[in-house]
Every structure is written in C-alpha cells, then in structure tokens.
Amino acid sequence: MTEPDSPGSEGGGTHPAGRRPKRPGRQDWSSWPEYDAAAAGFRGYWYPVTWSSHVTGKPLAVTLCGEKIALVRDGGQVHALHDRCPHRGVPLSLGDQQFPGTLSCPYHGWTYRLDDGELCAVITDGPQSRICGKVRVQTYPVAERLGMVWVYMPLADEEPHPIDSQLPEELVDNAFMMGGRIEPRAGNWRFACENGFDEGHAKYLHRTSLWRLFKAMPTWNITRIVPEGRWIYRVQDEVHWEADFPGVGRWTGKRWWKIQPPKETFNLGNTGKPKKVDPVIESREFPGFASLSMPGVLRIAYPKFIHYEFYVPVDADNHQYVGVMVNFTEGWKTLGFYAKYLGAVRWLFHGQFSGQDAWMVDVTDAPPEKLYRPDVSLTAWRTLAEEEFAKKRAETGAK
Image 1 (cartoon, rainbow, N blue to C red):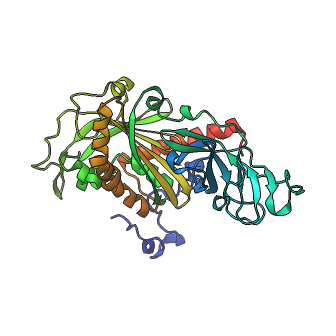
Image 2: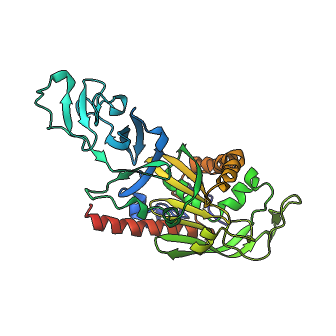
Image 3: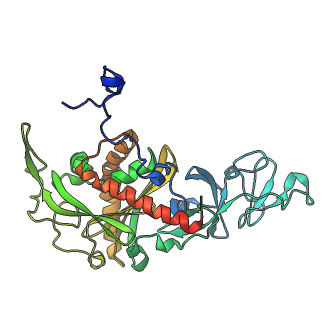
C-alpha cells in the first residue's frame, strides 16, 4: 500500500520513535543547485525579447531575467538601457528622445547617451549641470537576428559571445522563410522548457489538438537521451501505438479517420517515417527529432520544416514564449509556405496546440515531484544546464 500524496498524509498518524515515514518522490532540486537557483533565468546568454518591427524611436519596456529594460531605436540601431532613472526611479521607457543618440527621463529631463548610458544633460538644471558625467545607467548588448531583437544579459562584466554561436547552426548557414509568434505566458520558464522537451506529454495532452486531427499519436515509447555537441537529443528506440494495460483495458490513439501509423521506428517528426525529407534537414543528420540546448532552445525537426521554441525568462513567475517555424526554401515557393502558415499553422500549431502547453505550464507546481521512466528527458536537461552554466560561471569568474 502506498502513502497518499496529499498535505494531510505528511503529518498525520503515530509512528515509532516519533519518526514520520519518508516522503516519496523528489522533494527539491538540490541535485542541480545552479538550475534550482535559476528561477529568473540563466545570465550570460542572448535572449529574444520582441520583434524588430516593434522597436522604434518610442521607447519600449521589456523585462528579462527579472531586470527592467528600455529598448529604443536610434539611427536604425536598437539600444537597451536599464529602465530606471537614478534620480527618482522613474522608468526611462516613459521618456523620449529630445536629442539624437539620447533618451530623456519624462520627469526632470535627465538625458542619457544611448551607447554607454552616461548622463550627458539635465534639461531642468541648465547647460552647466554639475551632475553630468557623474551618473550612468546600465546598458545591454543588443543584436537583431531572425527578425527579432536579442538582448544579452551579462553574468559578470564579460563581453558577450557572438550571438550566432548560440543560434541553431542550420539557421546561420542556410536561407529560409519563417513564421512565428511571441507572447507573454504565466509560469516559470523552466516549466515551459521542460514541457517542450518532455518525452511523455505530447502523446496524451495533445491527442485532442486539431493539429493532430488526422494523425495518430503513439501511446508510449522507449526513448534514450543522446548528447551531441551543445545539444541533447531524444532518440526513439521503440514506438508503440496501442497497448493493453493489465486490469484496466486497452488504450489506443488510433481512430478510423486518422492516417494509419507506420510499423517502423522513426526519428524525424512524431507521427511516422517520412517519404521525403528537405535536403537541409536531411544533411544535419539529427539523431532524434527533439533536441534542446542552453539557455532553453528547443528544436523539433519535421521532414519539411523545423519548429523552434525559445523560453525567455521574465521573472520567477512569468516567461515569454517565442515559437518560430522555419522552412528552408527561397523564391516563389515561399508564397506557399506563408499561405500555409497564415492559413493554418499559426492558429492550429502556434495557437491551439501550443495553448495546451501553456495551460499545463501555468498550473505546474514542482518540486516536490515524483518522476517516472520517460522523465529521463527532464533530468538530462537539468544536468546539461547544470554543467554548462557551471562552466560559464568559471569562465567569467562570476561568484
């Protein structure tokens, strides 16, 4: 007989020598102290914060890793400053540009240079203000890739690594077309990242999604985790479409209106072995269709396209979901991709399908937790994050 997993069961009853029975499951994340401490995200990485088209000469407020940041475009270049005027704490994102290359606080006109954050003028104190040059707001490195603005959140005082070294390699080396969605979501970024790489949930949670209306999902798999470079991959050794559960009954994801699933095992896409694969995707020779890298970049490889998710930490209770779908095509063929994306994929995949994930991330409450066999995907990711961030901390000399 197992002990019920409820608050009342932990303290009730009488036990020999005043001892309570050992609580089942993992009570905390102490096995991964760096990961446990990263509720507001891992510093020392680039993060996408918004679409490039959303940043103009009017400041835009964003929050990243718990820090408030003001974005503004000047002369075609995006700048990022800490979103707080040191004078009285007013958000600089409420200000405007009174002079080229600067941003002025809306309260008293304290004006900061965009390139280094130094106070260069105080409009209400005259041209000879003595405080100029004595105050500075923090600035952050900024880059634009994939049609998005990326901000580097420093761990110490290090120079940022090249952003291309953090992007999926195939997005650096090849031409492609892309459609995507950026939206704020409730829940910690780690729950979102773990959900994305989780081996078990898609088969059950997404069985009702319209995206999978005509394709069956497996019932269960035998999966192992394979590291390759900076990525870890989920590799499927067995795929089972239905099963008999002793004392319960038979369960299957098959339906008469769904395409008959294949008998062979596959590792590209999650519904069957493809007849034809895009040359760029085929050339990558991915060990498995799902892969994950720091600081929380998910890649799901399908035969004709690749879906990416970036889990951007806002604070301990909120994150930003960045989902993009990429098709490696050029010329007139891009019209077909855009038509398919805007007509179906955006609302079926990035909408209803991904919305099921958002629902689960919002209600997840862990630890404590009781893990099962498929959760090797979660523990492998936590171990990767732990090891990679420990290396980064050592490289930067950060405490």
